[in-house]
Image (cartoon, rainbow, N blue to C red):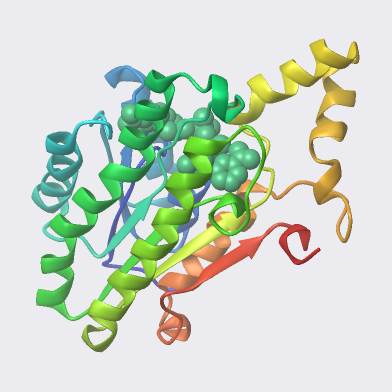
Length: 262
Ligand code: NAD
């Protein structure tokens, strides 16, 4: 897959799914702006490793996606560093689980601020650059909770469902301009994000961490029997950036071993 000469920005990409997507895009030849909330030295070390592994230019921005000015600033910094922004992957996210009646309002606001709001700021800032060049790819890293609900995740599910709508609108508004906008919806992916949920199950049921992992992903264990691999999400992102995927827009693609189909 040839993304040589393309430039990508991936929010929340020092770890987990975002890092896998950034690595896959770099592996296909794109220059990449990484982003996260780690200390600058740590983020820059991740960027150096990516550049060394793939022979591309990779930089790090510590822009906090919960701040609208920093979300738009991330796009500006990408254009300044690379001269353009061709691919935007909105991925940064946090999680909190609790029933709706005891969901802490502060956590609700934090999830909305980090998952929901920044998408509009990165996209609105990047789209004019893509329109000018007549080519662009916007990808939203969701979860299957963009398509179906899940108990104890009111804020997260509400945000992800709203973003499925945003994906469709951006796709329609830019369908004739060489720009596509899609969402990728994985099932469970073993990253630091889901560690608290695994630890909660282990403590609640008095079982080991490994047993808790099996229990957590049990609903996904039907057709495929395992969680989704970060690299599989990265490969899908690269495909969506290819010319072969030019007609795929406004969609939400599940990578969950058939979980959502059950
Ligand atoms: P992770 O904890 O491994 O990585 C989170 C990344 O987001 C890190 O790079 C972190 O620095 C960054 N981040 C956190 N807050 C930020 C902020 N305010 N500004 C900028 N960056 C910030 O998590 P992950 O599991 O890779 O999750 C990433 C995304 O994928 C989330 O949106 C999550 O909802 C989604 N997702 C996760 C799973 C899963 O099972 N792990 C499945 C599907 C979708």
